[in-house]
Length: 460
Image (cartoon, rainbow, N blue to C red; front, side):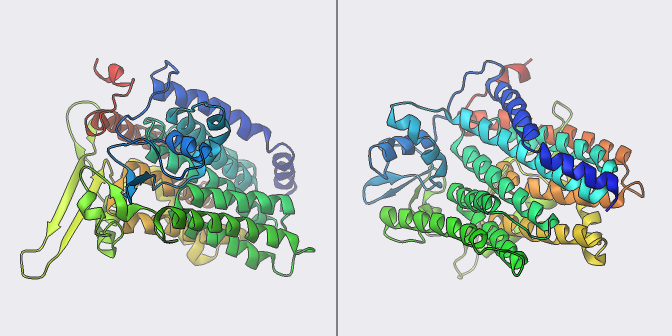
């Protein structure tokens, strides 16, 4: 390793905490201004429940909520529950115990800011090891592109329980990924502190959104394999495994206490104005959904129009019914989803990273690509089995895609993906992806009845 690169890595190691805290503060202010239309007054999506309802229930020693939201709750034996992971509600408990209330918008912005900072910190970790001093330009382009992309802004647009769940889970996953990659770069030497951070982050991620459990198992399992024979003490491994197992046990016990089954998260009892009959038949997860969702997320082109914002992503419900004696019924929902490769051309760097994987170019770089590629697959697969493609779901896998693309960009260097090309791809990604946020502001005003404060700027 060149001396300059080694020095740069040591500098990052010694001062690694200052930058993410500063960036998360800046992003919090920026996202809060965006969500509230620069008023800094948070509101709620009134149609949906929120985590404060569940936190209030926990504070009273209950698992069911007292409120009766029209959508996004589960009714079982006359009681209403939230089918969302309980972690964001648990984080509100100290305030709930004293009668306080934390707005959904505040938490969405907080987690979104943390996600952006954790993602950028991973770029700072990888940059000196994979590209040396020349990686800083790529790092800035990829960092700015993600934190200001239309997907990040869309996540921070709605004070909606779905957005909070995804922002929380994605943030915790990025923390775990950061510890994992740091261990991978350091030949899997990991301290008890880092093992505790990784284990807790994994548990909190699937406690916010259960589909993240597969990624969590992969990260913990990969660390255990890498640590084998290198650890001086068994305690890092015990802590790394013990915390997620304890979190999983609590989550399954929570399911049993609510619905009488450890594997029931509430979707088959879900209340929905539009989809209730379909969901109660247990049809949310189906392999039949794979072609629809894969097409939507990666290949479906948006439409174009002559008025601002010029790129149009639509919201529709597709119903597939049999015309023969064989009974078949499927619902597929698309909420503002178009190909992420079209919306974010910078993601095409993934294909350069794929070449690194196939050729084994650079042992550390290839190992990073392989691990991140598996993580990407584990994040995408549960989404593609579900009944809906939605723009917010892109935030489940987009940070991992961006990191893989960053590795590909640093591998290409000046050959075909130089800094100027990367900067152009980043600028184009911002312009195209911002249409997701703009379309969301307009469409959800009618679909959810939530009128974003930003609408007044779009009406002129």
